[in-house]
Length: 293
Ligand code: NAI
Image (cartoon, rainbow, N blue to C red; front, top):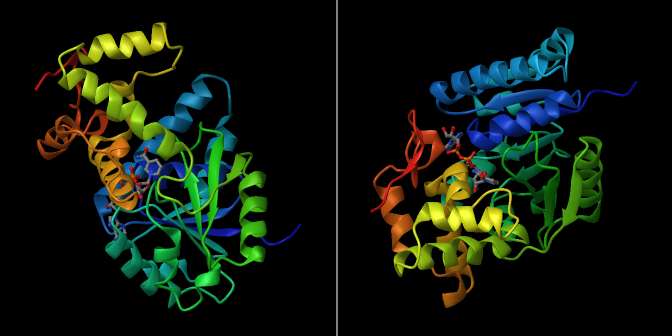
């Protein structure tokens, strides 16, 4: 048996925690890093809950749960990534912060470590430019929730070497995911197609044509979607989703097709982030109900 793949995950929020679970389930040695101790504790507690539920459903046994958990270490120093073969960054969607973290990270990892970003919308070429060896940088974009969603977009930048692309595709396929190689353009494939889905729903609401619940109901029961646009925005997080829309809009030279909606901006500003804050377009206390502005 070859050496176990050592994977570093930077950011233990919604995506980082999910990606750590995927890698640990595939048998990798995972170090999950965050600057916030709270985020690390939350990720650990949430994994415990998710795996216990899988046992209840009869999908895994206690031994498998313990195996997955023992594959993950929760760390609070970036230098704990030193032994990584692959790192995947899932921190805040901000190009300057990502570049700063990538540049520091490169000083700790070995020369052939692949340094990937889970960014939803930012330029991989720009992130790669913060590295001394930009050819090792690539986009590896999971969808939420990472353990359930099969698709992963793999995005080579202009600087990315063919070997890094091949190796990344190989690893993600080994993790039982379906890979779509996408070009390094704003929003890649899925997040670009998704912008008008959210945007038009928000405009229909703003024009007073229908409320959130009616739009969601229609898209599910008539449109055949698994989730309506407002439920989905609450699931993703209004802050994350708004930032991605703003980033795609800006990157496409302010093409009005991707113009963000004030409604979403106000909800994000109010802290109505969706499920993660208990309130978004819907209230997530005992009885779910829509919150109109
Ligand atoms: P989140 O807000 O749930 O988690 C971000 C985590 O990063 C937090 O725990 C925070 O403490 C940590 N963090 C922030 N700055 C840091 C730093 N400098 N060093 C270390 N940790 C730091 O965000 P989420 O939703 O997990 O998104 C993370 C990335 O994944 C973003 O780039 C986002 O665009 C992308 N993404 C998000 C998806 C979603 O549905 N939420 C889907 C696919 C990609």
